[in-house]
Image 1 (cartoon, rainbow, N blue to C red):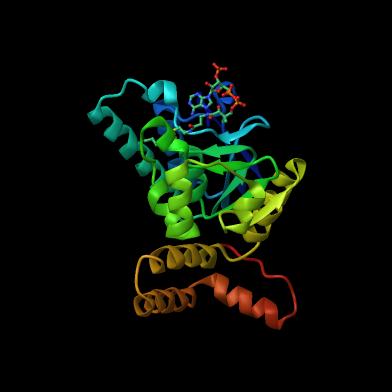
Image 2: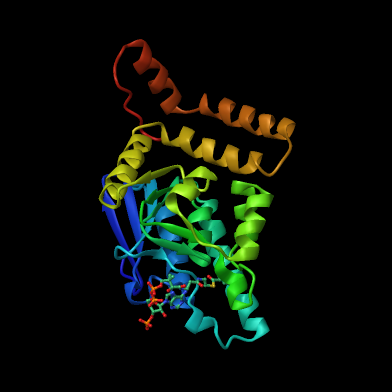
Length: 260
Ligand code: HXC
């Protein structure tokens, strides 16, 4: 895969997607968003890949936001189209059947925080900084920040962060539930890869059904959510992975899942 602003590297069954514009702290312009959408589309269909990691190039930033130089002179119509593009790409990440983990290695501001939030979960290095500073630029978040931040940390905390534009460090992000774990900078990628590897060793159909059930269930009431889970659970019994997983347990050996 050959892109201008994005690197894709595969390690075992994991694809590492790196936003690669370090001179502007990996800010997202139109081209980068289009490329990111294409990468996600390709990885969704890539049978060699079970898990995707998204990170930023360099040791300073994950993504410092949408590209302010690009946005500066947009018209209202163009601004709306840019927001729609980003939302389409971020939603495709959220709705990807495979798990997507954000490895937040530095600044995750504005569109960067929004990118991290559309991933399934986030691990952060001690250097990470999070925030939605858009009001300081005279704009609202535009890639889902008002929606996903409120869902992740609750409306009160989200509103404080959104109204003040305040930047928080990794420990505070951990405390409010925005990230799952904080590591030393050099430990971030090994830890995320270790988690990705653990996921890869499980039955992938079951992993993907878990993701879909959580995502769909979070948008509905508990009764509908339980029904979604019952359907997912039932479906597992049509798979070879279920037969193999249970047989392996009973035979006291490791399962050999095939994702079928
Ligand atoms: C364009 C950016 C950028 C951005 C940094 N740069 N962030 N360029 N868009 N979002 C560029 C700087 O202009 C600078 O370029 C270089 O990257 C290094 O940044 P510095 O500011 O010199 O670094 P530092 O002093 O360490 O400050 C780091 C920082 C700061 C705190 C992260 O760069 C910053 O506040 N960036 C903007 C963060 C932000 O407001 N993000 C939200 C954007 S709005 P030069 O050429 O001078 O070296 C958004 C909306 C999303 O995301 C929705 C859209 C629809």
